[in-house]
Image (cartoon, rainbow over the protein chains, first blue to last red):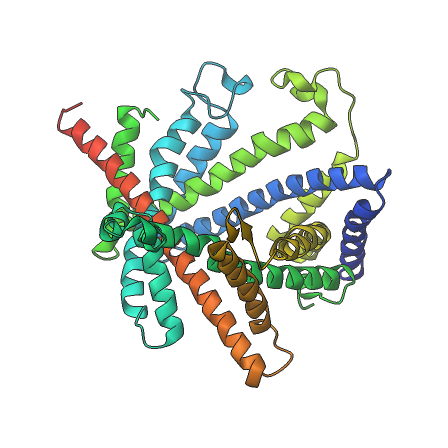
Length: 225
Length: 227
């Protein structure tokens, strides 16, 4: 029950989705569509599980007065308020019949006032760390590091007005050497070549792993017991 | 997007709280960080409930129950097979109860099977066959006035780059001699790609930073009484 049933579920679901491509008539086509909806529904329960884990972790920390327990109250409060205003569709003229993000809803207010600034600033903060990390890491010590450095700089300069100014004096016959044109060329050709090699490698890896999962050779997701 | 003064005030203060981390870890940053965790977890949960669970599960299994606020469900017959998905979902929650937590493997098995089945086909079609097909391009490109040297060179770079990049990922044989040299060119191609990706990542982060600074300026104008 603990291992055989999950292995059978994986095999049946995986095989059905593959067969749906090769045998278009019913019932595989319908199963393919319905499984996609099932997957979405299970994903929502995964969000609920995540919320449950969050409550358990931070609730426990508050109860035991653990490290930074006062901040756990902030997490719990933010979670509870957002959940209540979202599930209840509080605020806004249409109420529970209306759109979740309709103007005037409190959920939209939380999104605009709290979530958007926090997420954007968190990622913006990385700009400083990426800059300082690259300053320390990017030393042109080897040919490979030099290529990476030059390519990165051309792309950065080529996408700003500085790139145009620095090489704007070049005659028309050498316009392909201007930094913006070089940046475009790097993106279109060598970058595509590298991306493509990586993508093909990943595709082979994913295909092999998928097959191992469906056939029950790869069982890591079932845990140890 | 027009934000209300309250949204600007809260957003501005939270932005400053996050930026305070640039000095060092402090209670203001921790407050904002913890708030972010709680709000984002609830946000995605709510989006999932209203965007997926209601229309795809509740409206299908019990259309009568939701037809008052979901008109599209009115007059439809229940589709009981969606209860299977609900059952899998509930089984996933057993992870919260250690004694029966092993039941969540059944749901996980469905997720793994679905991902493996769709990825097997999707990656083969779009990331393997389609990418190889796109690489099969002419090495000699004819322009209006004869040979187009620039385009031919670009095509050569692409084909050689993909081939050498793939050779670099071929680990079944040691990279010595000719294979080593080809693999070295593959590394150079990959380095160009990583450099370009790095450039784009930095630009995206800087663009976000500028957006936040712009929002701060708007907020500061509001604080100082300007328009």
